[in-house]
Amino acid sequence: MRFGADVAQLENYFKTALIPALNKHGVKSVGVFKEWRPSDPAKIYLLTPYASLEQYAAVNGKVKADADFIKNSAAYNGVAVDKALYSRFTASLMSAFEGWPAITVPATGPRIFELRTYEGYSEDAVTRKVKMFNDGEYPIFQRAKLNPVFFGEVIAGDKMPRLTYLLSCSSMEERDKGWAAFIADPAWKKLVGDPQYANTISKIINTFLVPTSYSQV
Image 1 (spheres, rainbow, N blue to C red):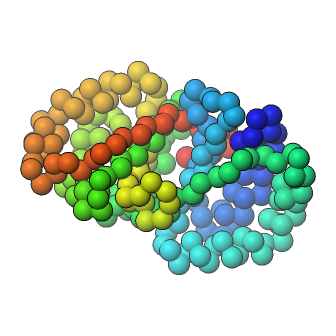
Image 2 (image 1 turned 180 degrees about the vertical axis):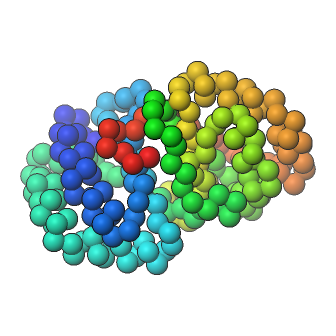
């Protein structure tokens, strides 16, 4: 966002225009998140899952032509230049991992999300890291109660090659306990010791998020 921008106006656009239009045209479980520890200016994260690239292309065309969307987004589109809501936004298009092909919506109740991005020094490094997930990491996450939401290989966006995934826990304390259990798991120790998975990650970026009241994730 921009310093001093009307965050509520952007959220109202998500809540009353964009998300209802996406839901109407078959896109479910749209997530909207804010930082666990807010920065200034604020950052907002939007997660939109599509079943395929074809749906992505089709839905975006339908939403732009939807009469209710056009009406409900009029205030957002009418923001004056001196009242701009954001400086810029970035977008990443991700392909779901074969072993976790669809988004998993966590149970309702208190929850905190950890968005993790792994950059690799080459495309092959990221490909091998994706294989490592598919070869056995998912059950380790589940045993550790680090509840996976999605796993995606970035196919368009910045800072490539990279992959991104999202975990959910009931609290930061549960998150910390979960990672301790993950690292201690014998299956993880076996995986991480496999030479084929050496040097797959050159940089890890993690961000802690909380859902907005209207988030569907």
